[in-house]
Length: 377
Image 1 (cartoon, rainbow, N blue to C red):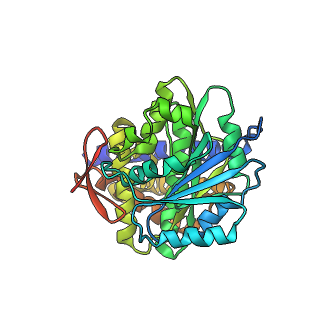
Image 2: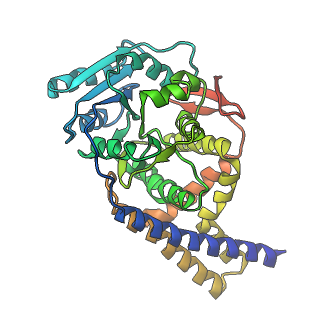
């Protein structure tokens, strides 16, 4: 029995190491791609639903205003509570960028269970332009972001544009661990999934589409009760026969977790959401966690030489991933010595995600139904 377990663990570790090498190679290829060229200038409305005085909120919002783009850019922010401190950040933004058209919507659609979409529904009437870019409040972008997104949206058959993102740590140890999860697990896994047609993603970092496309997929109201609203919108666009494009650049996702509990809470929410959206693919992602199996193989083999060699090889393959990811913009420098610990935590989150339970989202607890809809608990 022990020998069988050792063989299973060894096989998973070897396959997982090969997967890591493949992922690192695909990251390198992603970096080398040529960005599409802007065909014509179009005016753009950026939608920014806000909630509270988040870490780096001012810097993140400023990055969307400091764009090198010849067209008009309108920034529509939204808060659900009139006393939300995020409103002050919008006031300061207006003072710093007086040349920008910046507006603030207050209130939300009370019938929507998804708080972000409830906010966005209330913001949409302020949008003046045909091209809409919905982006989460924790995203930081480069000055050529809007041009790159619009250029991708102008490509034939493209109905929606979304963007891959890197972790951008803005705190201490746990924020660096959260950023590493994005860089070393999420981003490479998406590229592998895209390569083999196993992933059909759409991310809250960027959802760019035209108003006519939004209307064709039912408007934001159609996703008012859906937890994975970004994925659902991408899926709806694909069902129209249009493509969801991912241009060859990344944006930054702010990671500000200050404790293990905070990190675990939001990573469990992500993991459970992905498991509900793509259960088969999520179960198969066990192959992206070779390190725990390599460690188990050492114990099961009585610390044999071959098990030690497999462990060393696994560590080397896994470290190749963050080395390649660092070449992408939007994030920071990886702490390679933290990678093994990050791998073990990610595996623990993977296992824990199969335990039934609610998800916590911005201080609220929700029950997620099998169809992806949410109900406050």
